[in-house]
Image (cartoon, rainbow, N blue to C red; front, side, top):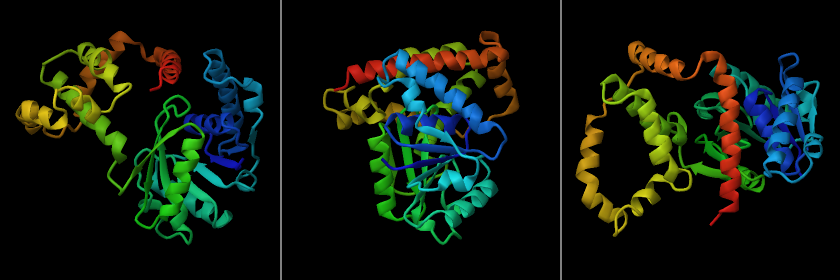
Length: 309
């Protein structure tokens, strides 16, 4: 099994370590912040125990965790690795510095992938000698529970590198999707941005409360979207499929989108939404609720695995 180097040991880095280790890969994890890698190991052990408890892994959590080792230096982390997953801060200057180091230290056969949420690979790899082996592999948080990974190459990324990364991600149980070109924010964020912006607009314009907008998604759209995408959803929402749906509802849906001017997150509306959320969930309870979210995602993942088809 290929050795994996995880550079950056925050929430995403520790989650990636679990993804690769549970698939049998030896992993080395490193972070420049003192104590961060050791803290990540605590997260890894705790989350693996949770996954085992709900049946998402059958191997003993201790055996999976044993495949993850803390590296003392970046050089030690990269030694012998065939794939590097970078998870550093979301600042382009930091990405440039990190990838310059990775490019200098790794052999040309090693794939260099970034978990960046929105910075295109072209912004931090252009000047590298090995830029053809660099790409974005953007996960969804937390990737050990939400399997989608967006693969986005720069204009100069070798197609074979994208294909190799896609094969690796599929092998470790993720669901890779490939963008054919760079777009601002990548595809998943663009889809999410459209929905979130409209949710803010509806609150801003006094159409519906924060709690009820959330209910429209979690008790409505989200039920179908947990196992179908938007195109399959509309294909099944009219007897004749997509073309029939467009004929029936195209004028209505098109008219709605004409009304949807950009939402720029004005302070007043954000404040109203935040106040409504804090009335439902105290700020100091967010971490506990996030853990609840992860347990719900575990249950959903287990259900989807058992009902696959």
